[in-house]
Length: 255
Image 1: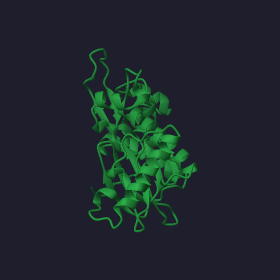
Image 2 (image 1 turned 180 degrees about the vertical axis):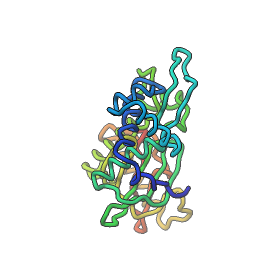
Image 3 (image 1 turned 60 degrees about the vertical axis):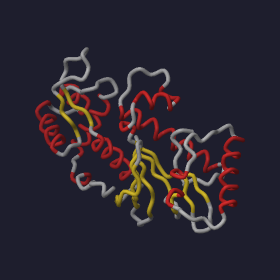
């Protein structure tokens, strides 16, 4: 775990972001987006667009591929990298005055990266970036109900869907007074939520009153069930505990 390099965000031009957005839009229907299509969507001349793309490739925000992945396609083109998608989301969140600075990484898993962020008032929050590309698609499709009838997909699209679903669950649970982080904002594959003052339950070796903690955990499960919900990943890695022994749920992608 380390720091998230966002130093380039403030130096990218409006045209740079138009090109990144054009590739994002093109990837809805293309595995690799041709230069001509990028230029049309971004409303830029061919030569100017090509120059911007060279820089974005150098910054590793975009990848160029001359070998099509699918046998049915002969096109060369460009695709967003994870970092490029991150920049689009962070730019949007920054423009809405949600995120002003990005700090250290505090969590990493098979399906997400978690960072400390802050707003202009130096109020700290959590930024969760969904990374479904780390998971085998066959396993992912079996776990995610919103993929059952889809044959085509992109990892960017799947990560965005996972973020939307998790944000919706956090919002509903928070409104119904469940002990969850307060949802703050959502953009693409990024969820911004309240920073919980506590410790991951998996890091706690000794508990003064384990019976009390057990009762609270069971009451959470029963209350979820009363609303027709089952948390499919309810374990010590997805729970926080504070100094008073209060439990907070922090991860919801498999509800």
